[in-house]
Length: 181
Image (tube, rainbow, N blue to C red; front, top):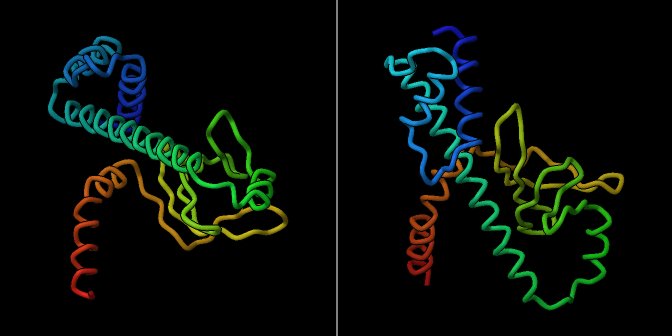
């Protein structure tokens, strides 16, 4: 399958996915709709496999976004419960960040999911058409917080795999702590 055909299939499948009721849609329904729209037989095994990859990638990305939004909501709820001891620091941070609704964005326009410390944060960003979850250290320069090379950016698929394994990681940490005690 040539790259032009793949691109047409991917764009069509993504358009259909964005406009579908994800509670009712099936891969078969998406593939059939794309097949009709493109006038191509997408049941041919290589094309069917490609459509499946596009659908899985889209669903993984949507799950990562939903998880990130859920985490942001949890963080917002926790912040509301905290004391306002850091008013001066919060005022400085408010000057450095842009807000849209309840969501916080950094200077590059990336969604800040949470702040792990003064210099570390988790952000959701777009890079080359892919959604990335970035866990990174930042430094201040000229009144702006800039990312360092210290950190990691995970694709939606990698984030889904990581987040699925968080309970196992937590269990291993508890086990290690119990050995040290």
